Image 1 (cartoon, one colour):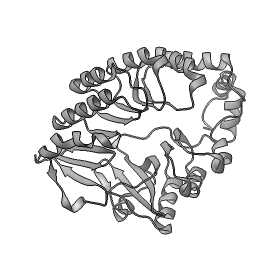
Image 2 (cartoon, rainbow, N blue to C red):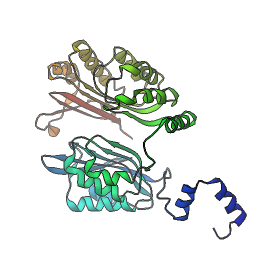
Image 3 (cartoon, one colour):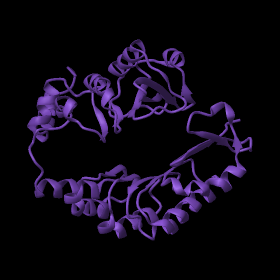
Image 4 (cartoon, rainbow, N blue to C red):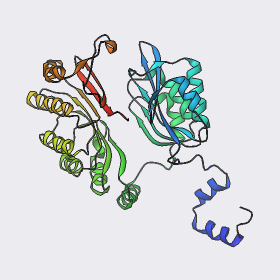
Length: 358
């Protein structure tokens, strides 16, 4: 920097805001916002069951054991792209000791990239300490998704946001204009259950955003249903999560079209209510598309009286006794060119698959 002409530095300073200059002068730019394509990303999952803590790490080559993570890790070329706290562990999760957590936290503290996505599910109150400790050392977040009470960690979360005060109309118009002009689709949009007073803002953003890759909806969307339908029908949505009622009558044909086109690869639906015809139609649609392997992930929760509708799929799949657990049954496809996991219990199922690499 000593070789940069002073006149250049002065001109740069003239076009920067005072806030940006303060950051630069304080040398507090933080960590990288992106990583080189050759770097290795990891996803960390931490969960709780029966008072015991579990964890697992996913990578481009699949799930890794703790020793594999240690041997792979390099502060300069490895980074945790996502950290998720789950209300229950996956099959791939292992028991987590204090030493495990301390080592993982140290990796996150030393990595050179910010955490891309930080997600806290509900209920995970018993993991609040772990959430707080990682937030304190992570160096920044690109995306933050919280579905639980944030009071215990509110002081830590506060530092991730500016204290510029409540948003007014001018603020929103400016943000909307930025979104309308950006050249990339929104990666993740979450419409939470308590967003009733913000539905006009949601509609305004959806109209100008140019597309959403991952869409999560946790409330009644009747007021903006035409916009949501168009968003999915345009083919940009790769992952869809919907919870609650009512599900509109356009949902099944719209999802079916996108599944057949191969654009929508992840679906998660939670059926609530007494619309028997719609529940049956959604479950039968899921069974049909799973048999055709037209998507990578499918999660469907529904009332227990519809469990019998799983039977056509169960007859086609192969029972895996080694994976059986209390209250759950596992199946897999008999074909050898895919790895498939189908977990079924009395209230729903989770299905996922990936092609083998030869």
